[in-house]
Each structure stands twice: as C-alpha cells, then as structure tokens.
Image (cartoon, rainbow, N blue to C red; front, side, top):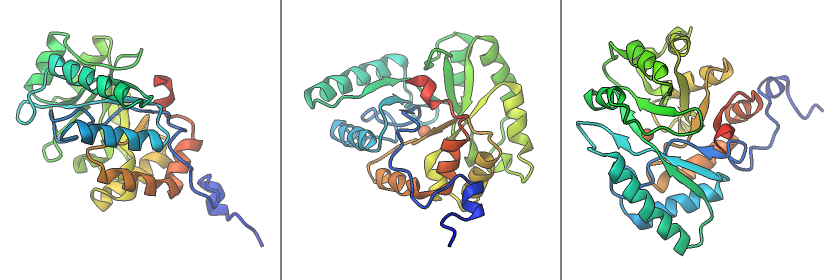
Amino acid sequence: MMSVSWLHKLFGQTEQGLEDFSFLGADMHSHLLPGIDDGSVNMDDSISMIKGLVKLGFSRLITTPHFMIDGFSNTAAIVSEKLNELKIRLKEEEIEIQIDAAAEYFLDEGFLNAIENDELLSFGEDKYVLFELSYVNEPRNLNEVIFKLCSGGYKPVLAHAERYAYLHSESLNAYQEIKDTGALLQMNILSIAALYKSENKHISESLLKKGLIDFMATDLHNIRQLELLSNTLNSKYLKLAMNNNILLNKKLL
Ligand SMILES: [Fe+2]
C-alpha cells in the first residue's frame, strides 16, 4: 500500500503536520505592545502572547502596532516607550526572545505624511515597511505609494494581502501587478485556518501555490488566536510554504 499519495507529493505534505513555526523563525506582523491598538490589552496579556509565540517556535519578533489616523494615533515615541517597558518585563520574567517594533501603517494621510517626512518605522536591513489598505475601498494611489516608498529606499510589504476582496480573481493578476510595481506580499497564517472569510482561505491557497507570498506572519491580536495558529500546523499549504523556500522571514533572524 502506498503511504503517500501523489496529491500529497504534489503539495510536499507527509502524513505528519509540522511541529512548530521554527521554519519561519521570525514573525514580522503582530500586535503585542500593551494598550496601544486592538491587540494586547495590558502587560500580562503581552507576556502571555509572547510566551505562546516562543512555544510555537518563533525566535524573533517584530511587532507592528497599528498607525491609523481614524483609529490609533500612535507615534514612534509611544512605540519606543511601550517596547522598552515590555523588554524590562521580559527580562524580569526571564523570557529569552529577540523583540523589536515597527508599525502597520494604514494607507491614509498620516502614512503619506510619514513617507513625505521620512519618519517611517521600518524593519530589517532591507528597510521593510508594513502597510495595510481599506478592506472596502480600493485605493487609487496604491501604485504611487509603492513607487514613493521604493524610491525612498524602502521595501513596501502589503499586510495580509489575501484579505482585500477587490484584489481577488482566479488569475491573481492584481497581486502580480502589485509585486511588479515593487511591493512584497505578506499573508496571515490564520487565513489558511479560515479565521476570516472562506474566500480568503481560497485565495491564500492559490497565492501560496503560485509562489507569490514573500512573508508569512501571525498578525497575533490576542491569546485565543494562539490555539488557532497551532491548528494550522497540520495544513498542507503551510508545508507547501515551507517547501517552496521563497519566504523571506528567515532573512530577519
Ligand atoms: Fe495587523
């Protein structure tokens, strides 16, 4: 009896799921700083979330609080202060993890001003800048923004690329165009667990099969999502992401 079907071979899946997320090493999108966005609500929450991520195999965290004029009026100073407080508490608790902070910018006036004034919080040697779009309205200035970031020496990374319904199509053309303009694509691991809409799961699978995803990340907002994350370790698509060897997460280690 054959133990591995041709389908499994095609997707690089064995019968066993992955043990943890150490194949990614670094998580570059999460909301772990206490009380400054819709993620961690207090320091205890932050510590529990970080303990969970360490347990899941991550060895480097770049946490990315929301910057959004109509929601979270964060600044570099606020982020730095909260990160320092968190690092002190991590030391007290003897939790060994390399943690830094950047931002998840919503494409609004605040982001445009930050680009104009060169006040961006980026991460990695390649100066990655994580940004997100409205889920409802397709932005008219996306290409222009990507172009500005690239010419300023940054590498734009579109957060949870699979979650924008107006980019969805069987051909994935919109995604290819964004990449051709110069942005990289980040996918939420939880999309393959269908945490969000089921069409996001479908698009996620297609994007992974076509090798269009550059970063995978947790986008962790709360402790409950840790269990959902561990459930995705059985996904054949996660294994596919690991095997196609194009993810850039490890470059951040
Ligand atoms: Fe996020």
